[in-house]
Image 1: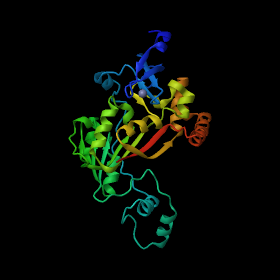
Image 2: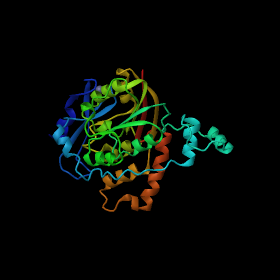
Image 3: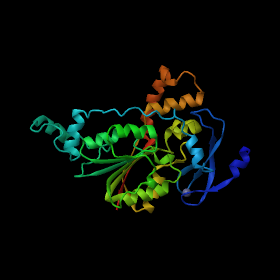
Image 4: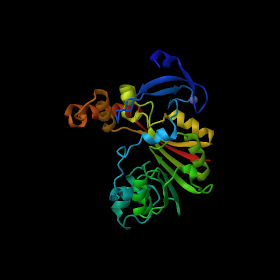
Length: 319
Ligand SMILES: [Zn+2]
């Protein structure tokens, strides 16, 4: 299909059914394949999506063994300062020795971190797409009853090595009870799902009332995407089937009667450098070039100030 035809082609948005318009086309830049994939943009949802949606067999082929090498879970120790923060601001008990006046004073001065999950007594935590289980191990050490779902066999085996309660399947095939979990976590997962709305409905069902859902996902409205276009690393064509913005995800969860509790963003030099590699087809990675490294650090500041970070971070609450 030539470019003119593609530009005039209109498809319906899978979320709202309104007309969406051709936004960009690209091949798989990571594995340098020739096949071109088309992405459309729905203005009313502020959503980018692949069209046509690849079959599940095709999607499986997007992930060769080299895509993500699941390393053994690293048991990162929680630093003393984080222990003080967790105890003073997030409701955890007995993480630091009691009686240290200075620790208490420091804890009083520290700010709450949205990266930390507030303690819930006998709390149940679910990590969907839990990878090698690092987050589950950390949460278990903090006193949570943890469960994971992980499709990748190698990552699943790594979880089993750590005696974690993990299911090697998709969320649709699990049979979790209604109103069961206090917290559900999905980090860099939703953009890979062929049926995100169906998954969100299940999450809503298995969360307790007032339960929290944490989501991290690339930001379709980021500064990096505006600069690099199809070469923006986090497009990750064709593995990312959807690219969400703040507006698009908030709207989706409104339909499920889940409210936005917190929204934040993050940006790292890494996305910039990887995008430079794609744009200039560099054989020697830009991270080994001093000039590019300086630019990548300069990029982070405006991205943060302008609220155009590469990564969206949401916390939704079930009503
Ligand atoms: Zn739409």
